[in-house]
Amino acid sequence: MIFIQLIFAHLLGDFILQPDSWVADKERKKVKSGYLYLHTLIHTVLSFAFLWDTELWWVALTVGISHFIIDAAKLSFQTVKNRKNWFFMDQALHVLVIAGISFYSNEFNFEFLKDTDLLKTMAGAVFLTTPASVFIRILLSSWTPVPETAGNLQTDSLSSAGKYIGILERLMVFTFIMVNHWEGVGFMVAAKSVFRFSDLAQARQRKLTEYVLIGTLLSFGMAVLIGILIK
Picture 1 (cartoon, rainbow, N blue to C red):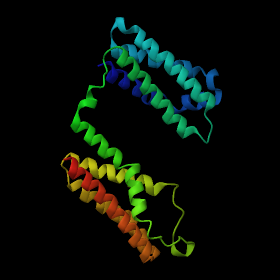
Picture 2 (picture 1 turned 90 degrees about the vertical axis):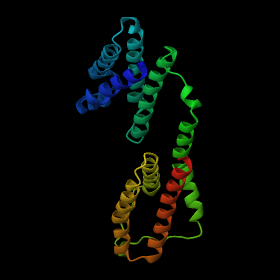
Picture 3 (picture 1 turned 180 degrees about the vertical axis):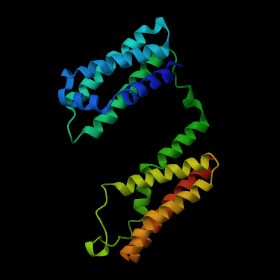
Picture 4 (picture 1 turned 180 degrees about the horizontal axis):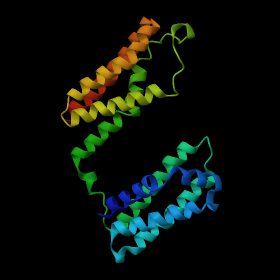
């Protein structure tokens, strides 16, 4: 199907065949950068090459034009503060355009939404992201961890790092269970113990250690339970 072909062409054009020097030049000169137009041409040529069908010339042309418009908008409105947001928005828009073209060409449909097993797996994965974080936060609301202080060998943590670490670890545990590799769950528990609890031991804060341990066990427990239920 042309969706996979166009996605492959996009990955090559946007990441493999676009040096960092081109990106820097585009961000500096914006729509005046010659690399923006060369980058657009590369995407158009790659799309046509991967399709290799003269009757689908309009697909390659549409991909090229839409890519130019999206990239130009990103360069015009992107700032240092919102650069990350614009990167993901830019990639999402490119994928949506490719999906739209594929759907229009009758090469892409939503029949997969009728697959009950797939929907259950997707629902489980979604639950293990933010919803599970909310459940864990509410369950732990009865306890308050010990405040961090410089004397306890603590350092400032990244903003919302704990939330995203929890989401990633639950999704990884869920994936291991779905593919019947339970040994991966043991690896995750061991890795989390080494990286997290060694720091807590140095801090010598028993309440904080217990708080993190309960949260970790809840996180892993939810992922294992959801995986078992879906299996």
